[in-house]
Structure formats: structure tokens, C-alpha cells
Image (cartoon, rainbow, N blue to C red; front, side, top):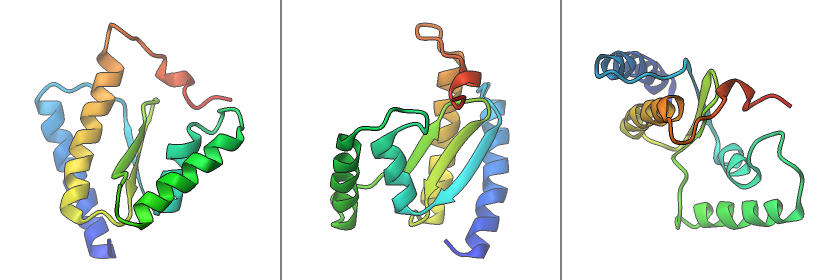
Length: 128
């Protein structure tokens, strides 16, 4: 994505957020980051920064990243349902893909915040 696309995405995210709130979605404040595949796949393989270390996570990263490099799989976004909620978008996504993903992420966050069958404590997700 180029600078023009980034600005358009920021404007679109504001509009998408207003529409989602109009439909009654209740989500934490959102933080969006555009990240390269290395970062997205590191999060995908290793999990949260406070997770224990294990050799198999490196093996999982290599497998996932190789599949991405060969065009066999793609992680479009990764969400941390904390307060605030963090959404990491893949930098090779097109503008329209990132607009759709932004709406999808808001639904993730709403579901995480409002689900009663499996309540979470979003304020503790990123604490070490």
C-alpha cells in the first residue's frame, strides 16, 4: 500500500467504525497497524509476547512463512482482543481487502467484548 492508500484507509476506517456503531456493535478502541509478513507470521506462530518459549514455535513459523512465500496460504489480519484492541493488517493486502478486514476486525472485537458464554478480561491480555 502506498501513502495515498494509507490515507484512504484511515478515512475509510473512521467511516466503517461509525457504521458499525450505528448497527449497535460494542467494541473497545481500535489500533490498526500495517505490518510485513514477517511480523504477522511471527505473531501467528509464536502467539502472545508473554507466551512461554518452545522450539516448535520456530518450526511452525517456518512452515507458515514458507506456505505464504509459495502462495499457498495467507494471514490477512491478526487481532489481539485487548483493551484497546489491536489489529495487524498485512502490508500486501490491497486497499479494498483492508477495508473489508477493518469491518471484520470490528466484529471480532465486538464478539470478544460482549460474549457471555466465555467472558474474557481484555485489560489483562497484554500484561506480563
